[in-house]
Image 1 (cartoon, one colour):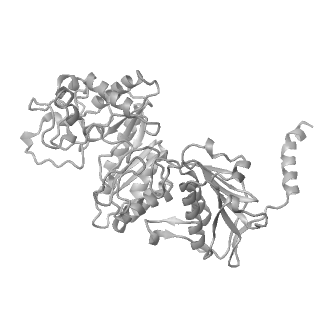
Image 2 (cartoon, helix red, strand yellow):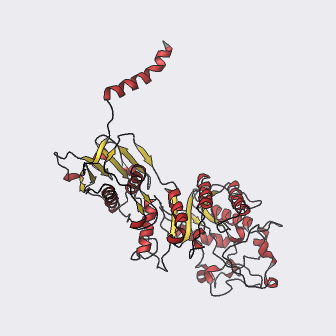
Image 3 (cartoon, one colour):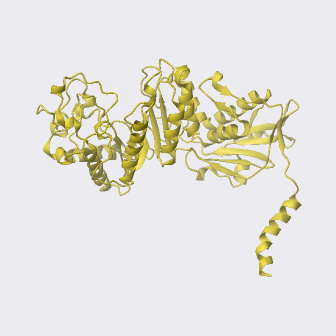
Length: 493
């Protein structure tokens, strides 16, 4: 008897399936005719309408049909076509699909008997095809469905890069609700098309009149690249304006050079390095953070300025006391450094790893920030002379390390192993990891292909818990680096 009781739920489930009858496929397009209509909410946002237009454009190209979009209130009682709801329609709400409760860029796909539901939270400020920091979940639901159900592929930007399998007949199989979200919580590919001005909070820099720029960002969206922060990048070099703001009043906040002076070596003041052990500097950085932080961009930016070979790190006794004696950089500090100085002009201290120093700097900023907000987090780079993992300092998950690999593809075996070892070393400190390479700045004039190695490495970092990806210097040389760039998008999708 006890064994029969255990089987009872399974028997009842089987009876329900038998009583409900077989689940037949529902046609969307058959015999040259559209059997479905795309429905949007009466007050649909720009993002929702854009998602619906993207859907019917791909459906029409797949079938040769002429699918249409109508507002939900325009549906009549005589409407017999299968409905495809895009966005937060009343019908979706009645089924318990509530977009207001969804996280940014998360989405739901439900192929039900009475209709297909493709929806997510669509912020009224979202402005596709621009990748801005506002949620456009319904658009990601549409792209996910086109990817999985129609086999659409977006190989490169523009019409010639779109692969849409042709269908004489298109049907849908009713099934269970599936929830989706971007593969990477924060992602950004910085495509450039000439030197373009920075945009507003809603446009992340660039010229939207430039066709290459516009299509590049459309291609990103089609791979479900989500960027819910206000800035055009994840977190960039933070202190480029500090010399102009504080150089006269507080020269002690800046690096003591080997020649005994503080401040920049020339007119490139944005490259001046900081005296990172200075507690007054820490308080100023936190003051800036408190004034400028937003819900979309909440973290303390501790990313030191970029630098050339001639821009020295601080040589003051306090900063040097934060270094570990005998810890030397294991790799070329920066593959972009061009150093024309004779060897005798190079300070021997440049071979010292600054990683423990900068790890302590990030912890000092975090401690100062937590005086104001116990949930504070800080972002810093593993880059240049602080690429190697720190030797002694331990971090914690409230410290986000954006790893900038010190190598350029293609890598030999030793370089690939060293790059992974550096990543794992920083992760072992307890920090949260992000991936911030400059891979696509090299090789764009000629065929320069490394998709197997690049795909293997990127997959490794994504599976190893990369919180974000931020690919700088995407020149967009599709004719010579297309397979590399396609793999970049595909692994994010």
